[in-house]
Length: 264
Image (tube, rainbow, N blue to C red; front, side, top):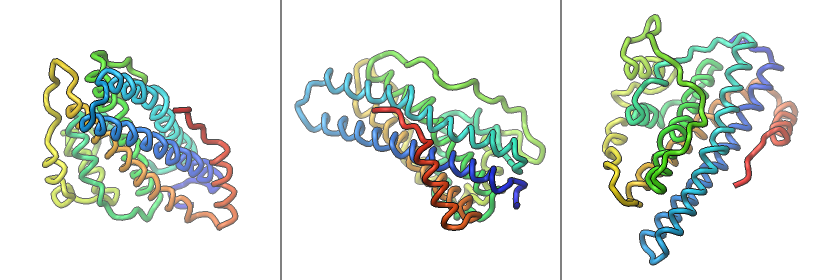
């Protein structure tokens, strides 16, 4: 099979991708609800302290369990693919690009063309993984810190190190753009990066709780979660094309039974 992955291995990969998509969707729904709660507070007379505690508690659940499970499904997918001979062309430069630059890099690719090969589908999963990890490691912890004054402990693994890759630029951001372009994404010069940059950088933290400041980070977390879902869905479409309708129905049923979604 193309990419060196057997059909049975691809079925397992597809199950992981389906579970990841479902998991991220649930967490995005939670994030949108929390964002709406903050927006309502800005235009109401609700008690600040009560709203802050409510939203911080909700974000903590998304941070500690929700996105962590989604991330595990995506990482597991890559382990399964690598163990079964998939031709993976992954870019460790993503892991060392500064957070706000990585946000722009990822958002610049939101209009990329549909993947048509397994290699391009795996590249979409890679982009989805970082679109999940960035809000988990940066935006949501920052929201919690702004709300309660304490940054939550790290629940993620050690970051990858980047020492350059043959055929790519030594600069991590440039290497990431080159890697994305090689796998069917848009050229960053025409990908709409200007519109992402126009959104501006989050303002500096204030001494008191600034709900607008929190919302800036929460908006970005929601945007990235939505982008991750898009990438995973497109990858699932490619992986699904290798199965007939009955096989696909059986796989979807297995994924539904296998997928674990932490309680809100």
